[in-house]
Figure (spheres, one colour):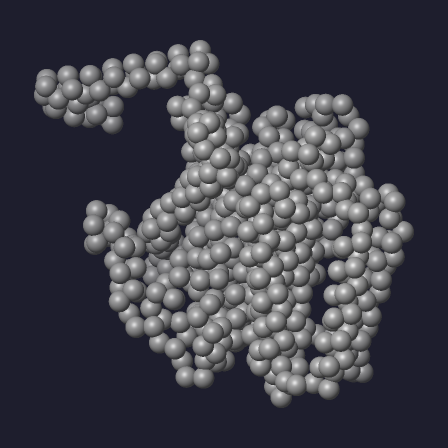
Amino acid sequence: MSARSALGRLLALGPLRLAALAAALALAAAANAVVGYVVIDGRLDGEWYDLRDLGFAVARLRAELDAVAPPALSYWVTALVGVGGILGFLGLVLLLGSWVERRLLARFQIRRGPNRVGPFGLLQPLADALKLMQKEVLVPRGADRLLYAVPPIAVFIPAVLAWGPVPWAPNMTYLDINVGVLYVIAVSSLAVLALFMAGWASNNHYALLGAMRTVAMMVSYEIPVSLALLSVVLVTGTLQLSEIVLWQEQHRLWLGLLLPVAFLTFFFSSTAEINRTPNDIAEAESEIVAGYHTEYSGMKAGLFIAIELGNAVVLGALVATMFLGGWSLFGLETWIPPYLVLAAKTGAVYFVLVWLRGTLPRFRLDQLMGFAWKYLIPISIANVGVVAVEAAILVRLDAPGIVPLSAFTLLNIALAVACARFAMPEPSGGPSAGRGASHAPVLTTVLGGLRASERLRSAP
Amino acid sequence: MESTGVAVAFWLLSALTVGGALLVLLSRNLLHALVFLVVAFLGTAGLFLTLSADFIAVAQILIYAGAIAVLIVFAIMLTPLASRDNANSLYAVPGILLGLAVAALVAFAALDGGWPELAGEALAERGFSSTVAAIGELLLGRYVLAFEVASVLLLFALVGAIVLVREEPPAGDGEGREP
């Protein structure tokens, strides 16, 4: 039915439009053929106009500058180019991201989301930003003036710095340092102090509660994050993010598959570090108003809200780089620009983050801390031990072939499933739900959801 | 100092570090002092970077600016409100004297030792690419005893902290309930 109706709709277009459509298709096919010829021919490889890897263009620019100017200039110019690229990308993400998040959340909650300002509501973030800028910034009485003013700016610094060592393409890394993994952990640990200062300087009990929660949570969850990244480093044998991606590309294996426990631990713990649901107890709006930024208004509050989004996207890029193959996509990266591959993976992780936000309820504070100390950290330590043995075996093989790698992958996935099945806390529904009670998800099957509401309505 | 860029970076970072450290001493508010302390730590990390010590620089940020600062936050928040200022202390003069003595010692060591000054190209020619591998091999090779002693000491500290804060469960209740 659909095929015939599609054909009918096509014919109804009329001969002129049909011809235009055919011409467009032919043009696209010709362009594809040209691109395919150029890529297979390899005459593009390493040239400065190779748009698949902007690193070549920068290298050419540097060579040209070095020929006519002192070497310091080329450093300055390339540094500014890189910073401009990262900041431009970040600005685009911050502008688009809030719209994407709100639209997606609306879809998860069966509503429409922002759709009035501009086409599809696309200008909503701009309108929000303008509104926030016009608002007065109130400083609460008794607030610590200095410490109140610094945090909204200070929280931005780690979120921008963390983009530095992310490799976008083989030659396209802004800060290709050989302590990249440590750098990421170090930079992300800087944010906690800024958030604490925000909460403390506000002279507000809710803000201080949020700040204390932030500090406690970040201190707890930095340990599983570090242990998860330690197992990545053990397997790849390098701290350099670009080398980690190269390892995944050479072995045609994503580390998320080889190290599922580390992957999930890193992902979950990072959601705690960046205050995303289900771990956003630091600004739980139903308990403590807005946590550490309760007393901030105007664009200062806007900065806090924006950086939450920026952190989520940085987390997406880091997860994609370290566990999902980074810019590599099993050979497809010679056809598609690798930075687009990385952006797509980042977007996918970000989508999962929004999905979690739309789906899961928030943990209680003691549940969250208990989960970190009693479950995640012991499991992570055990996982590092297992991975260390595997890494020792892999190092002793000359070239780790497909057999040991797939054997370890299967073993680790089995261990992860066993962990999830047997080593996790019992789901409890409060004080009345004793052991041995039914563990069926009561909320979704009996009380909540569309089906349940229909069933309740139809019940006599 | 082989280039103007490194010289400028050195003086800027030194000013940041020394200024931050001075403000730690001079500021009246304990939390302001903490912020300036973090600034001084970051400046030190930058100084390490100008010396091509990438691992030490990142470790400085991770441990001092990240962890130690949070530790101080805990210490401040868990002490009574009255002691939350950076007030005068009986130890001011001895402290300054001790600081000057340590500075003199470090300066003597820095000026007296014959440090091999290699950077950039010269380092690369020697096949020295990363300090991480070198530090790791030294820690688990030549200095393994000190490394193990340090880790045992940390374990003792951890166990000691747990023993100190552990509450005896009340007699009637068999297993302690979660708060």
